[in-house]
Amino acid sequence: MKLLINKKNQYNKMIVFLGTLLLTVSCSDYLDVNADTDNPKTAPLDLLLTNTQVSLSKLGDFDLYSGSVLEVYTHQMTTRADHDQYNTKPNNSFLSNDWNTVYLTLSDIETLIQQSESSGNLVYLGIAQMQKAYLLASAVDLWGDVPYSEATQLKNNTISPKFDNQKEIYNSVFKLIETAKTNLSSSQGSKKPGKDDLFYGGKASKWIKFANTFKLKLYNQTRLISDFDQVGFDALILENNFFTSNADDFQFNHTANVTPSDERNRYFYQSYNSTQFEAYQSPWFYEILMGMNPKIHNDNPDPRIKYYFFNQLKVGDFPPDQGDVATGNPKADYWDKTTGFFSIRFGSIGPNKDSSAEKSYTYPGVFPAGGRYDDGKGGLMSSTTATGIAPHRILTYDEFLYVQAELILATKLPGITGTKLREAMEASFAKVDQVVKNNKSTQVIPELVGSTEAVAFMDNVITEYNSAIDNSTKLEIIMTQKWVATYGDPLDQYNDYRRTGFPILANPNSTLPEYQLDNDDGFPLIDSQTVLNSPYQVSFFWPQSELNVNKNSPKQKNATTYKIFWDVD
Image 1 (cartoon, rainbow, N blue to C red):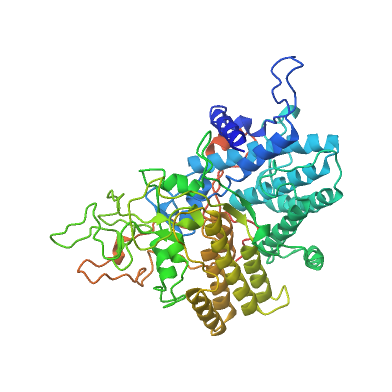
Image 2 (cartoon, rainbow, N blue to C red):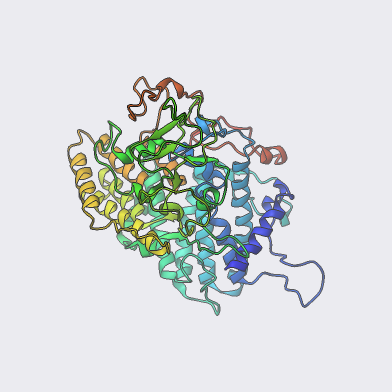
């Protein structure tokens, strides 16, 4: 796997120089540089599969490409970059990188589809089709109308693919999932995937569970449209072959290897392996976890916070970077002396927002980044202080349970919503334990499942849920807990917020104070030091580089008004 990832990284570096036109290039002439019969003209299926999966795993990854934007738009990180205040531009490099990732990977997947189909290796074919379905649905979720029917057709002289209707692409995705399931179930072919399948080790049964669970997620996203496919939804529910535990999770597993390529969690790599912070832990997220927010989970601290954040500062430690000991002014944009949490606020224009405070900032924890568990001892961070072993969670069992809870509340499924919410929270805590167990940390990290703190927290959430005055408040609780549980999966969180309006996000323009922190030291937070001058972007701009070279592309959208078709509220 190390060699394959390294080769893929080298490949990705080369494509930077090739420009947007290569988005439709197929790799079917693999190594076709001359007529040397000793060199193959097609890549082996196992190499193609692994390469496509490494590339697919980058889409929506936390603190990478569009994930760097989405983590801010979903208020789990803050930044000083353009995407603070929802101000991402059409020429943003993160958007272009993910556009390239999607279409270059789709080109490789098309080659995998053609070769597996012609060779009769239908399990490979089914996996390739599921990967294609996932990428296309994700592309629609981010951009809306995108190239599909004419994409990856450069060999047919299609260099300017048209942008297809987003709803029609989704309809094609639903059909493609069923076709993939048929091929996965066939077991046909002389060659079967194994270790080259980095997601499920070639187990077709797990791919089918993923196909069904992913399809249910898509149905949940589209459930409010006027022509919702009730017949297809009912058939899927009747089939009843979904994720049954976190062993089924669709995730990309990172390792501690650093050579010949760095296989550690990308969020870990961007923080622990760098002296230049670009993203910071969100104080809004922090206060909700601490039970400080007056509107949701008030006075109900979440025991996962020690797994989510690592504070370099111990309780009571004065910020060492630029704090003024003589006056007691911490010169911090946001610092909680009772825990050591240190960060910057969303939309901050405060005098300390741009200060360098590398010895004070709070780092990501063992979940989701493979960082440190916050044992209260503090300490300066570097890449040698933690392992970086944590998966990129793409679609998980606990997320599936939250989807079910939402569908039950919407009367699309039978059941008791509160019971399903409790089940989802229990699975979320179990997921943290699973990540910790696989992290190989030298720290002694307590289990969450069964702990007094975890049980009490869930009891309080259920009490809050049962006391909710209406379904909107109940939905807010479900979506807030899903948001907390899926920390590190900003693509689905972005979808959820646009669909439901939950969780409630920080609003600098609110007439009420955003933050409740008060260190009682004479240097309180000043609410007017956070501003919001840009509307929320309900879709991504199409990369300007694509529009510049594709004569069949549309005019640039207004990202604050161009909605994805399932965003009907």
